[in-house]
Image (cartoon, rainbow, N blue to C red; front, top):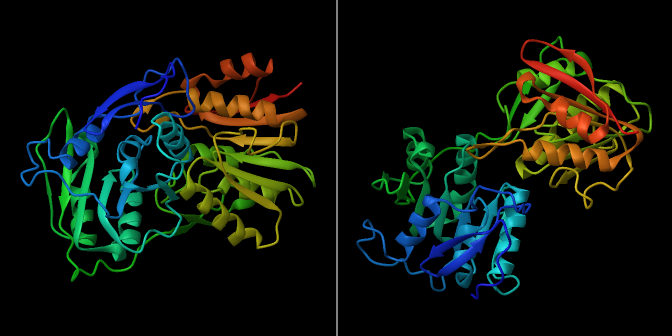
Length: 400
């Protein structure tokens, strides 16, 4: 692969297969976070036979089906592009970063096959590389989904920072795939080695989960929520969403309502129940979340209720046309992997303003200390406090 021009936000990543200029997505020249970390570096060095734990030398990847699960920003997929890897990712942003990084590295179109966590995985996997996710539930679900394709000769290697790999992580590998051990830590990163056991019976995949909502939250009281693994608050209703559900506006018939950063879709589903005849649009960057939102909505409103389910970055132009929305409901995240950041919230707010019609409203729930009212006033020229408690505020901004 050839090293092409470097965008301002790119950071060089030296790998055994050459130096790559990698970016996160969306590209931001002010971005200070790298698109790779020491765990990516450790894993690639091990595959090339350059780490202390690679006693047997380099791992043979030639002609083998290589699957990369949970690649954060495409660092692993881009480095291994010559071996036609299959990437499996829950993140729309990660997929877009991978496409950009592959193109920048000069990889041939279609050099890697990009699948989502909801897609059918390959029938046979010879090398399985796992970037350990923050969500133990997502790891459990994906190992269950991939286990039938793993065979006794499959090389299984996990990678993560020391803070990401716990005893419970190792137990999951051991329970679902086979005997598991870890490497020594190098630059605060660690590898996980798993030997597949074809005689192992891990039992059925426990995901997705369902639970009933409380009785005191308005139109959605007592309704069923469906959660695929990795979705925010998959076991219970989070307190910020609960606060918003108690103050939801009722949309007029025919209004287009967006549940932005929809998670399991409980807010949008409640909005549909509160405003019969409204058209709902559910948007999230997580494929697991969008699948959860669709399952929650259909469980409660049936197969024919008008709704769209989109995996996208905030409210980008490809997801929702400008000036086409009456109401946006938003509970923005303020973490990206291990980093605390308001970048996602800002993209959500700017995307909402673009998508709203004149007179359209953005309703936001957030922790009081995050100061979202400052951003909304700067962007919309107005911001009203709808409700507040010691921990959360609900804010309303109107597009003029």
